[in-house]
Length: 458
Image (cartoon, rainbow, N blue to C red; front, side):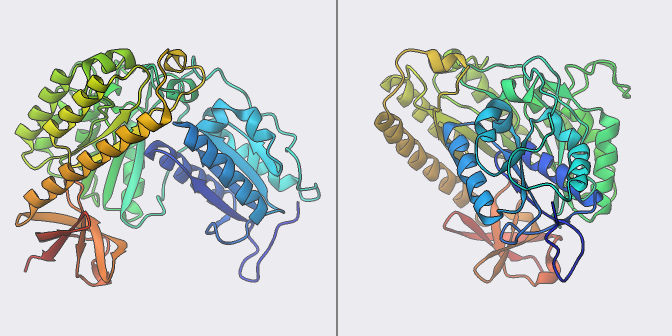
């Protein structure tokens, strides 16, 4: 391969595209760091590149379709580039991706840690043709039986304000609709010492906020009973927060999605004692019907979920509670759906992410009878979305007139800069660019198209 060198640099160039969850975003940041360390210049998707790395998602059939479409688009735009595909879709259907003309290499989630070796191989292929699969055979793992691999790390997030830290990967819950345990491996917790080191490095890069992420955050520590910490018992997310809270430069810490099952008892009280911890909880509900939850193998009831939200609101009165809700699960009756709708309205989430059920090959639910017709799922999805919009608007209106602190980001709403409150409300403020990456006190004054408006406090 001959590098496409520009007039500005002699470094080989690379594009990194990411789809899916914050765990994937972390992985892409880590692989981006690996590429920079190997002498690559990262360029935007719109520019030609020598290597295009695509980190895929497979949570739904639509995600698979989107991945194939993106891969073909990248190949068309960069006919001379090496196109590397990884991520969950690469784990679940490697052969189908390898059949796409122009793809050079496909490797799964555990092989992301081997990217150094793949890049070294690329650097030796200076006179090889660019078409066809590279003659590299990534080690194929039995994902369902193996622990996740933490061979990658991030030192610079590429984001001026926020860094994502993966503290846990894999899942052993095996919900009946979910393919993630099959492509991410067994639940695996990262040593707290490594987490603290990475937070320190991200703080040194200038980021003010840390987002703690994982596939199943609530189960963190189940596999790390011998972690040496000041207190006895199982380590949990709360222990991570206590250990990273003193890191200089970090002003805010927030959690990404945390499952309601295995929610640590000490988490909310610990967060209340640590002022850097933000009062936002993304709790994937999936269904507001006990019958559906049982068939999903979610291992909690609506009553237990409701009590958890009540507990969080008793500790954090203005907590932002967001969720994922699925409609159209096989066998979901009209009554099941109406129960879900009423339950969602009862909880009053600040944001609702609605998904239509998508059968994933190899999961139990894909073989369930009574698969719902698409038009029924579509109708239920629309009704749930409307309910979520009402709930979201109500929560935001309740925040008008209150004081908050906002981390200003390099994002705009018209002529205004944007940021997020502690309870994760997108907020637009008239402040100069010099305030980017600063946490400023504001008064929330209104809502416009779902965006909070605010003025700085004098």
